[in-house]
Structure formats: structure tokens, C-alpha cells
Length: 383
Image 1 (spheres, rainbow, N blue to C red):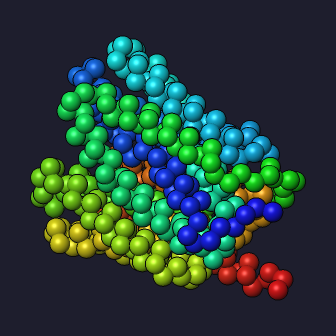
Image 2 (image 1 turned 45 degrees about the vertical axis):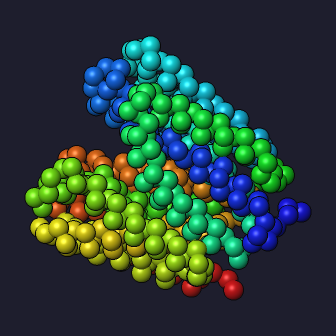
């Protein structure tokens, strides 16, 4: 039987450091790619193309890679794909330095992003194997709070070291993934999963929560991806637009810290209340023309989305057998990426107010449908 550590066990510490090191490329990528391509080609826009390729690789390959590796020992697969990701990033760094053609760079960026979704699901599966049910809410909340810090610190660190050598952030990304792989070799490794339940039963249980992940990610991306457009709309200079996303990140950190400290029970009621709170924040930003109200809306979204990520993860884990946890977390990551992509696409095609209204209506309508499905399933579920 898998060992369940106590609160003070160092197992969670190793898991947390390994996991956070693995997300450095996603957090540092936008700045690292932009600086590297600006030095290599004179255009930072090609850096955005590389980041987009990484995201596409992550979303498109998450489910196929999980299906391909199902049944193998999780830790070995995790270490293998982290090494593959580090190798792809190293090749990309060399290719940028050699001024290789853009199509080759895009392919390498996509390959480096492909393992991200699988790595996330395996990290979550390994955490579940080394944690008691009581500790899962707290540990997920801690990891999400550290994520927020990572996504704030990494771009700043990349900007600082890029002044000395434009490819230094790329090298830091390679090193962080390799460090994650080394630490992952010391995580608890359960036996391969046995026979799994049918896909229909599995999907019926998690679809409402996956839709909720998609919607909450879109709401958060509305703030983070639309900061410049939101700032310009209220008359702020583009140079201070980052304050809007920073305030949202700070609020997320506060909410995540509260959940980590109090460790409340994850319930559907919490999820749908927080989704209603997120709708209010999105609408507030969409209709506001003053900086104060926009910042308030950003805070409301941050306070709602951080606990949502924790509770949705735990509810998905509660709904499915342990043998399907890795597959569920892969779908969780894919839904998260699709939500971010959908919000970014809407912002590219529509104005900020229209985008906000579309996202708010989607969250309200689809969220209500999810709530009805969950409560109906509860009502007719055998006790």
C-alpha cells in the first residue's frame, strides 16, 4: 500500500519544488522568447509566435500522450518527458542562437510544450498517492499560491538576466526542467493502474467540472491577456497595464493562502458561488470606465478564481476512481488551456466590453447548466 505521509513529511516539499520548477518555462516563456527573438531577428512578435506554438503543443498533445503512457509507472514517465522537454528547449535555444528558420523554431517550441499537460497530470497523480484526503485541499491551495508567485517572479527574473545575455532566460528554463526531473526521481511511485472504468462513466462524472475549469480560466485570462486593452480603454498608459494583472495575482495569492490555512471542504456550493463572484468581477471590468472600478473587478476575479482551481481539482478527484486521476488531470489542464485560448481569441476579435459580456454570459449560462446537472445527478444517485 502507498505510504501516506504526515503534514510534516518532506515528500510534499520535494513534490512542490519539483512541480514549481517544471512550470518555469510556461511562466518565463513569454519574456524569454520575446527577448531571445528580438536579439536574433529584431522582432519580438516572433517570440509571441513561439509561445503560441508551445501552448498549442501543450493543449493538442495532452490527451494523446496520456493515452499513450497509460498503465506505465508514473514517475518514470514523468522523468522521461521532463528530460524530453528540457532537450527540446535546449535545441530551441541553439536554433535561435544559430538564427534558424522560423518554421523550425515553431516546431521545436511546440515539441517543448507537448509534455506540459502530461507532466501536470502526473504530478497531480503522484501528489494524490502521497497525500491523505484531508490534506489534498491544503496542498493544492499551497501549490496554486506558489504558482502565482512563480508567474510574477519569473518574468521579472527573465527581464533582469536578459540584459546581460539575451539567451540566459532560455538557459534558465532548460535548467529548471532538468532540476525538476532530478527531484521527480525521489517522489513516491505507485504501482501502474489496473483495469479502468468505461470512458462514458468517467466523462459523465467530470464534464460539469471541466466546463467550470474552462469558464474560470477564460475569466482569469480576460484580465491577464487583456490588461493592455483594458488599461487603454480607461485612459491609462500601456506601461502601467501590468498593475491590473498584478492586483489580480495578488488577490489570488491571498485567497489561495486563506484556503491553504483554513482548508475548507470542497463542495459544489462553493464552486458555483465563486463562479457567480467571478461573473460579477468580469462584468465590473467590462462596463467600467474608471481605474478604481477596474481594479476592484480585477480583485474580485482574483479572489474567486484561486479557490475555484483548488475546489475543482478536489471535486474531480472525488468523482472518479484513483486509476483515472491522471487522465482526469490531463483533461483539466486541456480545459484550462482552452479557456485561456478562447479568451485571448475573443479579445483579438472583439472590444473589451463585448468580450467581457460574452464571457460573463457564458459563465452564467453554462455554469447554471452545470449546477443543474450536478444537483440532478446528486438527487438520483443511489445513497
